Amino acid sequence: MAKVTGLGGIFFKSRDPAALSAWYAKHLGLAVDDWGGVRFNEDEERAGYTLWSPFAADTTYFGAGPQPYMVNFRVDDLDALLVQLRAAGIEVDERVDSSEFGRFGWATDPEGTRIELWQPST
Image (cartoon, rainbow, N blue to C red; front, top):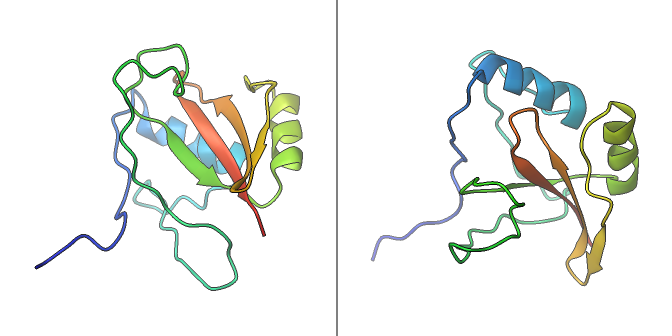
């Protein structure tokens, strides 16, 4: 039987795709290509994995707003990134969660979308 082998991408609508791509490049270090998106290549040196997970329609995990999705980004230094985001005036959740899977923090992009930042356990 043919099957899915992994996550191929995350696609979503934006009021201003160029400005939003620039924001993610500036504040989260995404290497945005000329076509406006980012390609993440897997390698043996980078910890982590990609999940696909439906949530209940009434979840509050994605924040209080009406957004139907949340993107989780793997990061190399969660604490330093949260400091950088706060210094740039970006809305950052005060809570940081730790578990056997790693450490998690949250911020909100300029369009009001809550994003999750994940530093995997090593």
